[in-house]
Length: 209
Image 1: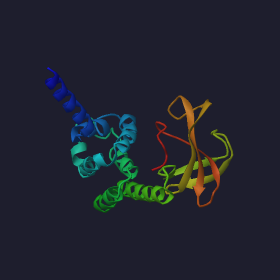
Image 2 (image 1 turned 120 degrees about the horizontal axis):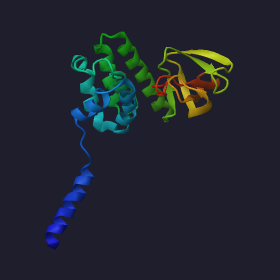
Image 3 (image 1 turned 60 degrees about the vertical axis):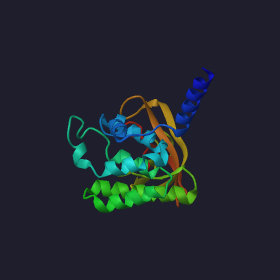
Image 4 (image 1 turned 90 degrees about the horizontal axis):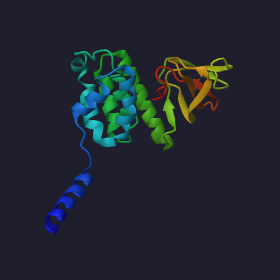
């Protein structure tokens, strides 16, 4: 009895050490087969998986026709969420995958996002910090305070590099674009050093890649 108990315990501990193995099907379920906001937030989850998920994300990038079929076609955040996740996985393979995809895709939006993702990845590597990013929205107001009616300090364009000083600043007195309190990020422009707030839009997903 002790022998079998010891054998089972060893097997359990070994299996735990091996960790959970991700599958293409699971990642597709999370990042493609759902509504826009649900699949968008899964980009955070994908980035947290680290290098182990890279082969799956790379495979998914080259299957747009596959994901344009079925009831979920056109409703998910794919491929933006996949590109965002790749930009936030600290591996030399990440920018390589993004550069290859940028050259391969014929969709201007995807090409532009991939290039911004590479820029954001390199910025974080140079600064050795995750508290940096590149604005991925076309245009946004840099505000003096976390309030929609605050003084506009500058109009920012896509591609602006920033340091995120404080993330997810909630203004409970103001309603956001999709209901609930408005959410802002306090940032510093690079290299200008000017500081201010920008409001998060959509489902309050980050504005930076």
